[in-house]
Image (cartoon, rainbow, N blue to C red; front, side):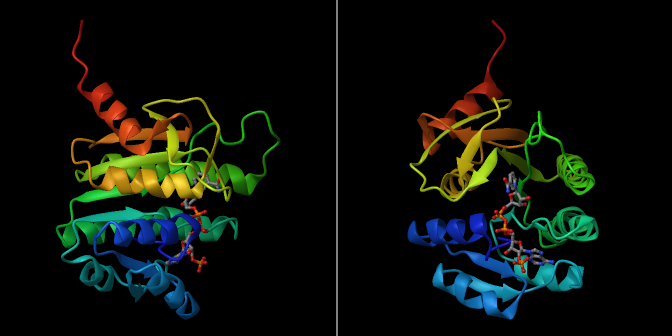
Length: 219
Ligand SMILES: NC(=O)c1ccc[n+]([C@@H]2O[C@H](COP(=O)([O-])OP(=O)(O)OC[C@H]3O[C@@H](n4cnc5c(N)ncnc54)[C@H](OP(=O)(O)O)[C@@H]3O)[C@@H](O)[C@H]2O)c1
């Protein structure tokens, strides 16, 4: 997982290890090592901006899937370009070279700021996320792009609404992490952009709903 010390990433590390998976967590700063090991993952310090493709490839080798949940979290347009944009490209290249074809990319819903006055840096963030979606969806990999609504630190209840398009809303980071964990282990869900917010279904039901939508036959 790339972004393993973050709000979503650290939760996801814990969920994966608690269910018996071996999680590998990529983090940026030395002081984040404890967050990642505390969540049960094997940590690797790697900077998406300065680190080489080869080093990241080596970290990813042997993994079944890569989850990209890193982000510049409002530290400026340049950082957004380097992390959410070029960092994602680097991660996808490294995954390909490491022959880890399943990649789950955390993106954002396009409605994120609808009805509000935005800033140029927010607009840049949204454009960068969309470009990331384009790069992931044309990568030739076994990709899934997950677009959560507005993230909160409320306690999750394990219940969400997911679909190829859903109404905009909030979702606790806890539930995004649970949803990602379910996506990772559902190979039938592939090559789809999936939106997810708080809702009534368990994550298993919600992932099942999306798989059904993808496989629906014409009447
Ligand atoms: N906030 C929202 O409402 C919202 C909505 C939809 C989608 N999202 C997206 O959801 C994702 C996860 O969000 P979150 O709340 O978990 O974010 P977060 O807590 O900021 O976690 C992101 C992680 O990425 C790491 N990172 C940043 N730059 C890096 C680099 N150069 N090399 C390696 N790691 C790096 C960060 O480390 P540092 O602490 O060192 O920076 C941090 O641990 C993000 O991609 C975000 O854009 C957010």
